[in-house]
Length: 335
Image (cartoon, rainbow, N blue to C red; front, side):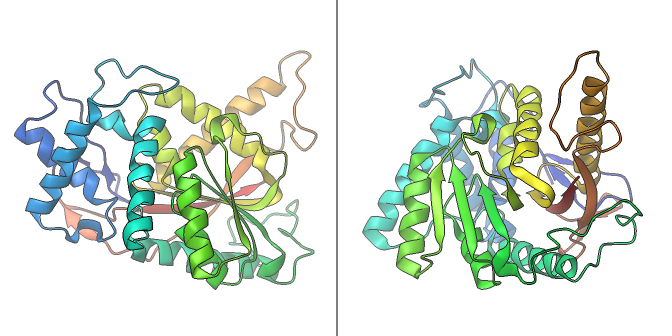
């Protein structure tokens, strides 16, 4: 498949990253964009080639019509189009108008099947934690039970960053979570998510306009969900810098002993674990500097996050002798 990078044998997911190209409307670009774009569709990769190419062509043509409020795109390729807020503002303005006219909920990032797997798997992981069970590799003599005081899921405070249409929070509400907050930097997304929650009777879910990279939230949450937000941030031309900002911000939003669950189609499980290891090393190096002051909970011996578990049940396929899946969902424990 175009745009696919083969991974080590022990990886769980095969990555989809469209390469840069000078001519954004070439046949090759349409094919690459179609492969990447299909992962966003409510129907996953089951769209026929004609529809996928039509969607990709629309996306490629649209790129020339928008510019970021904060950054200049300056000729970047299609691989960065999802990294700009103005793209999402326009997309959710269209979806909000479509909802008001036809009642449609809009597209589900990665598809509805993945969303349901994420919600049910997260519930199972949290229930295990409520009962004091941690994966063997994550338990050690110094580890404290996560959210020890909570006996059931209703007591968990949940934040979904980059919530989009908010349907993941609806799925989590169905699983028994009740303290639910969704944030997105696009006001149109928040309006759509709130409208859908009101229509569908999820009165316990609240939504706020907030940019994860410059968050104004002063609360810490026991469970933080990210389904595609880190992917979109990484597609910005300044993606590497913005990813560092992301991790610094998320570190302040996850309560000590809480969980961060990331679902990605652009990073493998191993890559996400490696990125967290890099964050931990960077934090430790900063704390070792003379006069450095960090969070009260932070220390050289206690890095912000550690790998806890990952989804192993996504459908897999073979390509070029390697086996993988399109999506990775990984849970990290906040120390």
